[in-house]
Structure formats: structure tokens, C-alpha cells
Length: 243
Image 1: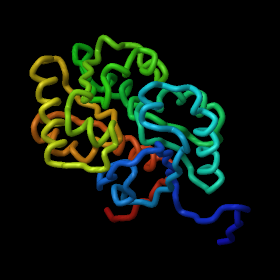
Image 2: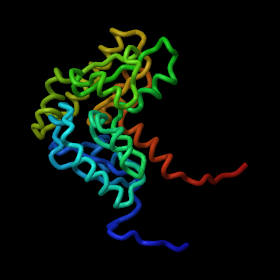
Image 3: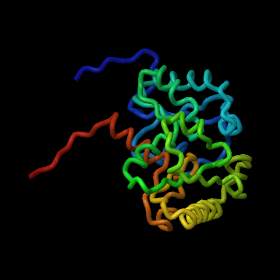
Image 4: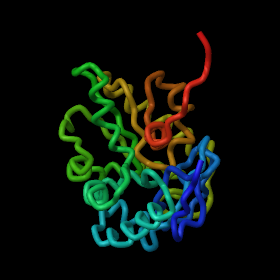
């Protein structure tokens, strides 16, 4: 085997590049921004100035910084680029058209797939960091047009989630946030019988997916289910075994 070095590439073996918001919260295991979440190496790159407020506010002016960070990840050898905020969906189409690798910025990209595997009479429930900002414009940016089949529940009124995720107090009480997430999921299901699968939009929510699923007893999709899936497509493993 003969290998060829790529000029300027500092390390190798990181197939997934992850664009991070310019934020300060505890990134616990299961969080998109925690390297121990994955069973494979990933490469992170913070997008300078891309704050939580600018993400939720859908500020288009962050794009240049986002593109610069994404290109740096590509230059360092990643095979696909994702993000750590579902509201990055606003930039999905443009960035995908300008990078030479697959781009899957938002967990919301899973919605068309989720709808396609459910009975036409079923709906998808979405738990999001801010239900007020998750509008049709953002959904359209990731190819979601059948909004009537969505039920959206925001966590902006949940005090423990709001303090650590939006106010960025720097402190996270995982038991209290988990209780809020599970309660929100239970409330959504109880009010909408047609919901047969849940999506966790926010990159901070995957740590609570198992507890949520244990309560609602249905498929739960999140950022990590998406990232793991894409990784499996850009890094194929050979099969061994016997007959």
C-alpha cells in the first residue's frame, strides 16, 4: 500500500467534521460536541461568532464564517460535514452546493425519511429548543413541505433547559433537564395520537433520548442517529464471517 500526503493536513482518520456554535455549555456524553459520544474519531471546528442567539434568530450573516470553518474541515480530510444546531438548516442548501463533500447540517433533514417510513395517517413529533423559531422557512430549507404531518413542541419554557442551553449559565442539572424532556415528549404524545415517531432537533438532547424512548415506546431520532448513519455510508466496513 502506498499513501500520499495531503499538504496542510495535520491529522488523519476523522471522517466526520462537526461545525460547532460559538457557545459555552457543558457538552456531556451523548451531546454532538462530546467526542466520547462516537465510536469513531470526529473532527470539531468552532464557527467564530455563530452564537445560539444568531442560530435561533436565523441570522444569514453568519454564512461566511460557517463556510470558512467547513472548508477547513474538508481541507483536514473529513468526508462529510455536519453541525451541532438544528437551526443550521437555514444554510444547508448553500453550503452543500459549495463543498466537495456531503453536507448534513441539521437533524431536521431526517424528517422526510421519517415521514416516508410511517403510515400516511401518522405524524412526526419534533422536540425543539425553540418552537417559536422552528417555522416553515426553516423546514423548507431541508426539504420539509408536508408540515401538516408535524407536531412541534418547544422547550423554551422549560426552566432548566432554558438556563443551560439558551442563557448559557455554564451549569447543567442532567436529572432535571431529562425530566423536562421526557415530560415534553409524554405531553406531545398524549395530545396527538397520530404521532408515531419523535425527532429531537437540538444537539444537546441526544443524552436524554433513551429515557424518552423508554417512556413513549416509539422510534426516537436525533442528531446522533443521523451522524452515525452518514458515517456508515462514507466509511464502509468489510464483512467477515462464515457460512
